[in-house]
Image (tube, rainbow, N blue to C red; front, side, top):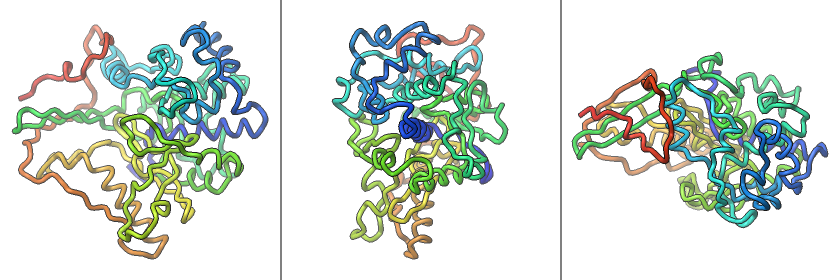
Length: 398
């Protein structure tokens, strides 16, 4: 990897999609208070021969607005990550799961009535992508240029950004390999670790909810330009930072705005008198199964800079550590050190953040590591039936 390598960054895409919708609102092409059916029914009918009422039931999403989707207030379920993982990794041949596939597959039971809770769901942002297709007069979801939100005057700052559509990541020049990690403990003695290169798998990643591939520098530019009001006007930006607490149990203490996530107190200054707002990042970290930008990808409003660390393995891949369980801390620990270094340069204060943590102490489990170019595919392929567990597909190597 180099400073120009483009790394699939998952949900960081959502901020770009939100900017596209807010730009459309500024241009009078839609209103955030518009109900979504008027935009989605035509394209769902054209591409899927369905409508929202046919999919979710009569009247269920009648009052759902574009603002509800942007703010994660639609009450719509998220996709089943286990099923999508299995479908992707064990299909007979590499496959692209399209936004229409996701919408058809998702559980249609609402988490809460529309507008009554803030529940993170990538389906919301696939729907927003379809709405953008419709208002721009395009025929298919593949026709939408996700990079069109960048003004021509700023184009040189985003040379290392793409939004892959169909096909494997390998077909896109300068996109990184990504390594999915699986581990399983065998008693207290052994821990099996498998690292699988996803380079030959689909890079579509949910489209307008997760398909960006970019360099860290380009994403840092995005957060700076967004906070500097070069992408949306002040009213739109202020609506993006109207945060409310998420109810998803995987993100306790997280708040969502419009295409932005806030985690108050995520970064611990060495000086306990420094308010958390000085270190807060307004951004949107993201992860695919083998790469991402979490936890450091956003803009610092206090000191007015953007920062992003992209990586091509969600977990550390060093099987020679005294205790390999510490691989789990690779991204948060590295991210903290990177952010601390930037803050120290900007503020002139050394050792700005406290990045220490309690580590696992050796002796730990004996590592058994296996690196795979890709997972072997059975001749018959692999079909999803219910909520199968990946462990069933992994041989016992001990």
